Image 1 (spheres, rainbow, N blue to C red):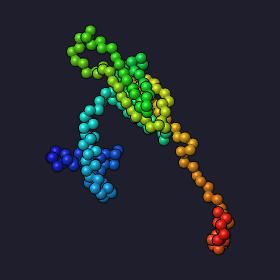
Image 2 (tube, helix red, strand yellow):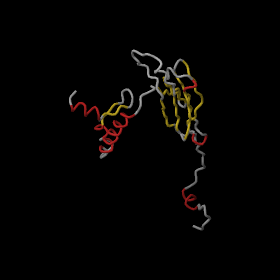
Image 3 (cartoon, one colour):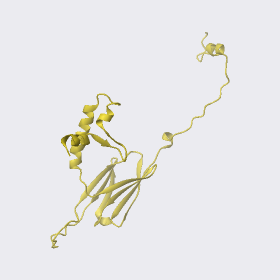
Image 4 (cartoon, rainbow, N blue to C red):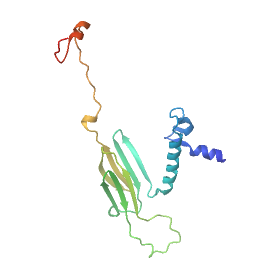
Length: 177
């Protein structure tokens, strides 16, 4: 790839399949925001280098208000994994006893190391359940929307039409007009 092609690729945002556009495409909507977008792209590149990628995980949206976080924790038992919720953060940590000194590996490609993954949850998201099956840890989440925040339909009351003169003469403060 040429340097120009790499620069164009670096300035491209991907928001899922079929939703890819570059910062140049944003210029028609956000005039003068090119510098903040460049800073965000640079920050993303720096942060992405330091994010651990172990263990791999998925976040699935099951329906409008239900989610499942799946972590591939092969080799970990239920007693080796700890799930905590503290200050709006879901923390999944795993620890193992290192038995590699007693074993003679010719090649060790299976990671057997401690980990910690943190997920920030919205205030409305609650942890419902967690289960482990065949090396997959599944944490079930649900977004609970309070009644006062749910959409509601407002009825429009019918009002008897009054002549314009009467409307002008009405006064809620009972002042003499």
